[in-house]
Structures are given as structure tokens and as C-alpha cells.
Image (spheres, rainbow, N blue to C red):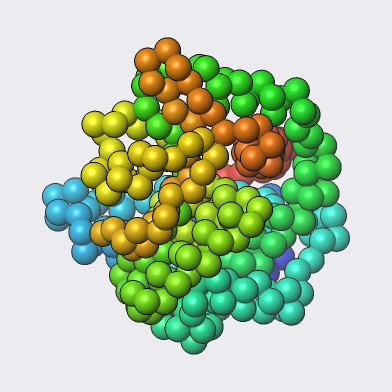
Length: 331
């Protein structure tokens, strides 16, 4: 996360004029940082942009062929700058609304992140350093995320409602007879170790997968558990990996689910991605469809629709902030 410039407006204007005339200008024989964007009365400098973009730029330099590096780096910087502008708008709006985040709140969130990933804060710091970032940057990013959450709560969350009718309509369309192909609709959970996940050993990952399966079997929400604890990319979707035909399923997946009825969990199995288990949401064979009971998936559907509506409202709100703001980009 970049550090906000604390200069007064008149200093920004002077700096802005000089940097427009001589990008990366020299003052007293030394190269002086230049402004790459102005957001209302605040400036974003090139050094701040480079610091924020460092992990992405390092990856590009390592993985992208030399002939494509220049264009990839330029694109990455543009994307990071857009993100920084949005973050600055959010910070300014929070300041206008007298919303703040204490160091204690950041400490608590950082400790929770470390715990949920079976890491210590020191281990996170070492991992950040190896990627070109720092713990201080990471803490600032956490602070902004908390600010965003508070703003969303105040401006958007209370206005976002998911009705029973919306849930039932979604259920009929997605979990009902509207499957457009034969197959099996699956949710997936995985616990990995070493490079495959957050656990230190194979046995630790196995025990963790078994523990999460027991929680779900005892009534915990599959999507909620998966979003927070699964080690696969599908975690961001609550473990929903879609509908698969029998021939599209890996052999281990088919063996795990072939005897399941909709709403049932598979046993935990070991795969190349760690220890996994599945929930069968529904299936279609010929003209016959089966689906998990609405009561089992109601909360999952509510969360999915709520999150989608919240994201859309936040996107629209951010656009409104942009339209009202003075934004000048000079990258």
C-alpha cells in the first residue's frame, strides 16, 4: 500500500506544474520524485506507484519474455494506478465521514489472517519481503480494507436486501430443472500442505479437511466454510465448481460422488491438490433432475445474491465518487 502525500494544496500545485514541464525533474542536482496522479487535493507519486506495483513488476521481470516485458509493465502500472486512485477516493470519503481505523483494529485483523493461514506475523513478514513488499505496506492495505468495509456498511450494506422470492427464483433456475446439460453440480473443499496450501504437513492437512467436513455435516454452511478455509481458487466462489458430465470428471471425483444423493457429502480423499471432499448440489440424467433441498442451500444462495448485489452497488458508488472528484493522471 502506498503512503499518502501530506503536502498542502499549494505545494501540490507547485509540484504539479514543475513535474508537468519536466517529468522526473532535477532539484539541487538530485532526481526529485514526480507526480503520476492527483486525486482532489492529494498526489500519488511515481515512487509510491512503483512501491505498490513492485510484486507484480518483479513477477513480470521473472516470468515474461524480454520482448513483452515493456508492454506488460506499462499495463501493470496503469492497472495499479487505477486501484490506487480508487483507494485514495475511499480514504478521502472515510475522512469526510469521520471514519477511522485504529492500530488495534489492524493488529487484530492481521493476527486473524495469520491464524487462519497457520502462519505467524513474522512468517507473513518474511513472505512479503521475498515478494518485494513489506509488513508496513501490508498493514496499510489492511487499514484501507477495513475502511472500505466500514464505508460499505454505512453507505451500502443497510440498503442491500435479498428477498425470499429472489432466493426461490435462483433455486429453481440453478438447482432445479434448468440444468442445460446432463451432469453433476458440485461444491469442492480442499486442504493442502507445503506449496499446495496453508498447512505444514500432509497429516495436518488431512485432519483439517476432516474437521471442516464434520462442521458442515453438523450444519455449518459449506460455502462459508470453503470461502474462509479452502486452499483452492474455487474458495472465492464458495467452492462452486459448476456442473460436470460424467466423462468430464476426474476418476477420483467420480468415485467420490457416484453414490451420493443431492445434499450429501463425499468422504475426504487425497488428490494432487491436497485432501478434498465434495457436496453434490444436484444432478441431471436424461430428463430426470434431482436437487438438494432448498433448506440446505438457502443460506448459500442468500450469501451469493447478497454479495453480488453488494459488489454491484459498491461499483456504482465508486463510479459516483470518481465522477464527483478531480482526477488527473500523468503516468
